[in-house]
Image (tube, rainbow, N blue to C red; front, side, top):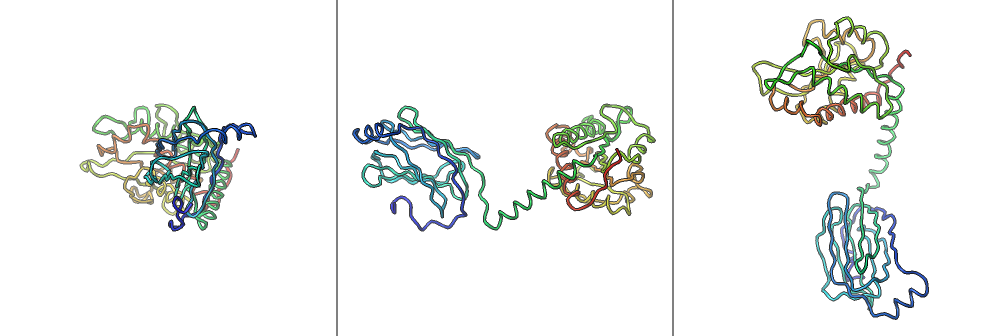
Length: 360
């Protein structure tokens, strides 16, 4: 195998090839048939790959036996076709998708060896002959270095713990403005009240899929009296509250970015704001304008934050006065990105901060 599988490849992290399902004739009769017939001639080898899926096609003059072997350092899958002949020269080619290279050579008389180099990835293959063509499909997932495995497991455990913690809570979602109060209006006519409601609905849907309970100030286009919003944030039904808005700045059409506000002096709300701000800017890739106390906007802060009896934040999800940002805020896909960023911020917060259970 020295011609086909050299040992001086660069060291790669170990992975596991799981399962190779081949449907071939079995038993002594089949073996006798294969032995009595002339070797199959392999004519062509094709690899089509993209993303995490690869298709390998081996065209032969007739079906034959296929035996697979897993080799490591570097990770590769060896396929032995027998009895078979390869008329061409040793093949070394770049492949697509998850497969790095494919090599083929005549090996020990009537055996043709094909080596599929998957580099630093683990691959699940299934293959069979269709007529005289052997077709295999492979799906991959990234391998983990030994020192990454424990970190990934710890990260997964933290994610499960945060999800469990959130399922014990009630998340309050406040879609800003509504009804005859449109909020800020973009030059294109897009109204803040429609954006905030769209994001709030997306956030509720994401949380519901994870079996996390929510309460909302509004689910349609209506205006809530100030007193109703104050009651919502102070009646103890929710453990965490997120109020959703869009920023605007007249005379500065190029200004944009994400800002998350907390009530000045409230440490728990500040921690929630920092967690949401971090995840939201990552999700949207909009400029990070920071987590800020609401007293930087008004001396007494926002009334929905200063009256809250639990950690609460007000998120400015982008400047609707910026034409490019307004165009993104109009798209349902971008609103979903915003909602996911907020949700991940909630999960990050509960990983590090104890939250009391809301009254039932």
